[in-house]
Image (cartoon, rainbow, N blue to C red; front, side, top):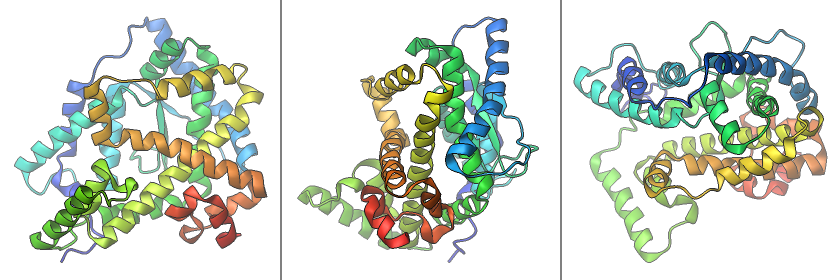
Length: 350
């Protein structure tokens, strides 16, 4: 049996090839002049610096240490950065364990990154391999330009609004270094060879199919997520739950902070929020809906709303200082059922 702490998925992918395929498949960004590109890059870098102080004031997290500048990138640069980060997260190396299968999985991964790269506005990457220890904030300027045009909102306001969300993630991880270690451990379990024989996996999959036919399946385990859980070992399921809950908390907290800070620093924040939420709910072509479902992007959207509802409830009840108990360690993170019922987390932790 393979040690669960040594991930094997990362060594099965040719990550360099994934980055190459992704940059070749990526769609071009919106047509813009060189002046508009330079203006967007400069303004996003400035907005990321300006967002730091109000985010720290609202969250009561962080200190007075100098903050590294954000890295403003295009889609191709984001793909390269993401493939490097995924290699680190999954314990991969520069050379895959099998060159042939490494190329195949690398091509598949690159295609996924190309699809995702056209929609992501920014992210804080705690596993970045760049020059900043502790992570790197990436902002994808072609996508920011595309969305602000689509929403017909003030570019300056929208760029600062986006930075409020992403800078919150940087503050979360920089103030709580254990978060990235917690993620790494869970990812190590999730991407490890569980040592199960084929019969055990088939038995779990058959049970999944029977429950689905009887209609006895938990709604939270439907679709691609339910299929993944069906073939996972119990430790892998627990690791999946840990990552889903943590992601829901991080995204919900960032959305809460973005709305708390927004009215004071973003004049048109109400218009931006209303139009952005409408964009999230917009009807999409069938193929795009299928791809989003397979990649778990719609589940990602639900993390924002469920996580924000949790944070809103707790902060309203006990205040931000007591809410920050959530960052003490893994044991104070909400459990899956507590995300849906915040009072249970208050009762257990506070």
